[in-house]
Image (tube, rainbow, N blue to C red; front, side, top):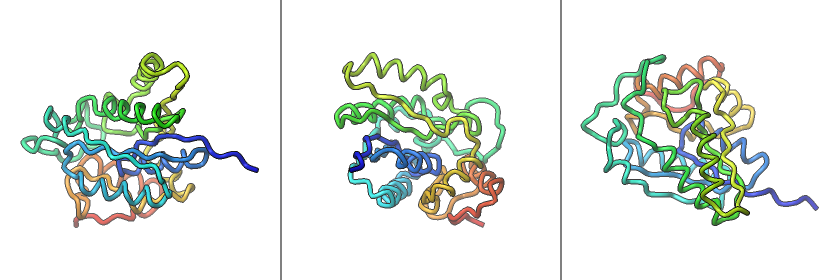
Length: 225
């Protein structure tokens, strides 16, 4: 009799990176999927994407966490309506205004707490360092430091690892990986601005469009003309 798969918590925003990360995790683990609402502009559309991805992977363990304090803190075009989401520019220098201060640390705190409660030994997150928007909390060095904090801040027997399987992949490689895994890329949402049709002009849309083009795979979501 085949042993049951071990449990992993997977952070799923609804975007393609986290969707493919869920697909990678599903090869070896039972999934407990975590989604975060933090007052972002496209919160409703991202929640819909999360629900679709969770249904696709038949995840019975799901948790939606309210981190709305990030919108009260502000400092990001994704949470503060007085800050415009800029026109996209691939290769932009510096940290863009769409960076949400210390967001990944907040997400991981919730995910690790849930993992410890569930007895999961891994938390997967779809951060990308090499082909992203330059967010400091997507760097491998950040996750290395966070692993140490998790070891120090949880029960000795918990032994929870932070797994970042796509961190060194380019976006086109992530699309190819998702296609090979049969991940539901058609359910994902990446746009920073719109919730019906993707704007096609923000940083996230430009990175996504380039990735699908380079991968030679049609992008299955609708865009504004």
